[in-house]
Length: 221
Image 1 (tube, rainbow, N blue to C red):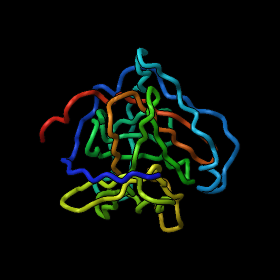
Image 2: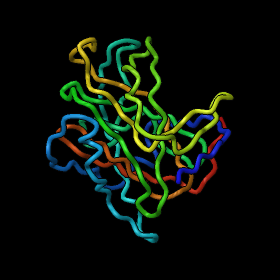
Image 3: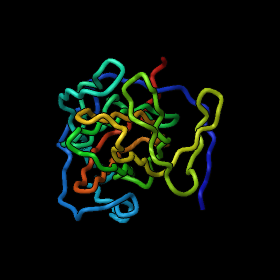
Image 4: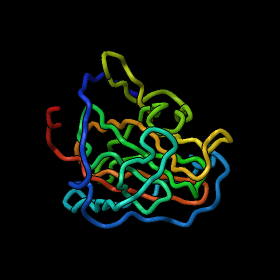
């Protein structure tokens, strides 16, 4: 059974450095090639384990220099994980409400990326909204609509926004400018504090980014 909750929230924000930037690096596993999102969804989640009393093995950030097509011509100068796809744009995720993330993809990888997430020291899931497009900001086209029913609805700017249990970032198309990074803007919702992980699956890679959601209130704007 799917439970849909309605939450009224304020936007989260953060800058480079901070709680996400400590700990061990993410892993990049060797996987069988995939042709499309259906193949990517067939891959199981391979997330690290973190017991109730264990330290969350968070993924460190490192410097990037993404050059995007449009806007100011560049994206955030940092990312989490080994690539070719990275979590960026934020360094702290809070429970409740939503947080804004940027997902960066290197030019050398032209395929789709499936993003899923789950708590690794508990039973909570991660929910994602579909990416938002800003034509003048250098962001890529909106994501592919995820399958199934939303798992949560979050009220943003007075309107209910559906969140799903996966984020689908589409492959490059003939209209995309070659040689530039792809940059997607999307939101996540996590209900409870704990240790969480994103798994990013591409046609020829699978990698994990681990982060700590604190038992703390979101700072005021």
